[in-house]
Image 1 (spheres, rainbow over the protein chains, first blue to last red):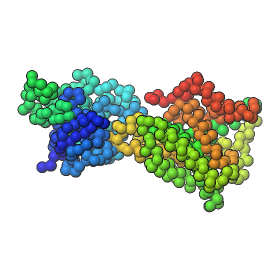
Image 2 (spheres, each protein chain N blue to C red; image 1 turned 135 degrees about the horizontal axis):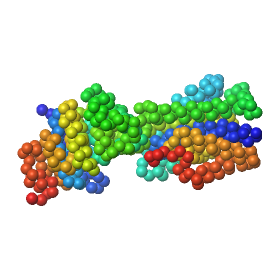
Image 3 (cartoon, helix red, strand yellow; image 1 turned 90 degrees about the vertical axis):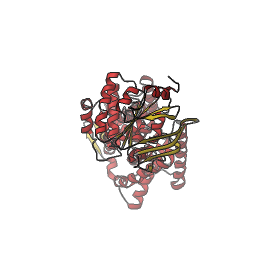
Image 4 (tube, rainbow over the protein chains, first blue to last red; image 1 turned 180 degrees about the horizontal axis):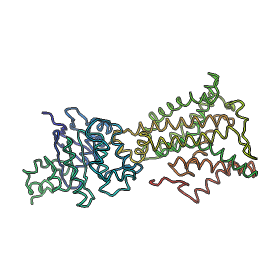
Length: 236
Length: 287
């Protein structure tokens, strides 16, 4: 069986600085994969390389066998990979509803997600739909960013640090939506520094350190010690 | 009563300046690009209308309908093949390139059409006027102002009511994140410059029917347009209309006091507004 998304030997640079060193990762259809790791481990660079914002220096990124690593970012979205970027990155000039609509501006694909479905998932957004996107609280902005990415009915949804900077109670609300997103058939890669949260929602976990994958496994098989070692690079 | 008349003539003149400025304002609002060749592109459009009129024997109002799509293509190609290559963090390259383009257009027109003044002849309508009480208002200046209001209204509708306008605003906000929505900033910019050139063509028709033009007058039109945009507040289209009217009124009153003061008064008004409201009259909230 071909994986939905297959990454092999991926390297990427930020200027002179090499951020990824031969990363291998697979995502199967319907699966949720969590990537954990400390700051600077290369998680965000990996997300940006998959979406084409950062160009891969070498290696393969394939979506159902078709290489996408040479595509520009807009073409990667058109192929069906959408991202919830780190820091949410809502458009300040657009209302909440316009922020959602622009998610489906270019890729108009029939699927489970449309404005109605997003408003069902996050009812508060319907109330706030005419507010400027950036006038919302951090948690609500995160909901908009997730909704915006879902609007294109992506085959792969990448979520980069969706809990960053949010209060624990808000994080719980956001993550409460994840099972519903999974139930819609989405395949997800979730980058998370909150290990507990990641282990709760993931089918498989990759741990990254210094631009390399240091550990993979299912939440059930990974011990705290193994994760600790992979995360910090020292024995507990 | 002469003051009232001067005020009305100034507001009408402001309509022309707003038309000069609307395209500049649109382009600046979306890609933070100051097109130093904007005035020369207006003059180029005036010659294009002149050419269409001569070749097909058309009235300027009809010729503009043919020239506008041509200028849209000129703008689209200019943005795609020239300006998109120099847009970036550094604001100097686009300034230099559009300055060079300004020189090229002026000299190209000079070679082709000579330095002789030209005019777009619109026939009897040029001399017609409407009487509002004691004030006579020329039909052409009134049409100019009405067109400016219509153009700004249409651009605002486009900007705030359409999917393309949404893409314009989002790209202006964040040209990187917008790519995650499948939108290519380079295409958005090309559309914007194309639309700006359509507006420039409308401005060119009123410029050419109002007075004589020759290849050298572009930079002064750019200056009025630029001042109108700054007075109005960067990125605000209605502000640009207000800015054009401020300059028009200042020029009209300057001329009423002493004909030599017309141009100077417009520039003084510009400086005064900048001193009192450095971000213009209607600055965009999230800039």
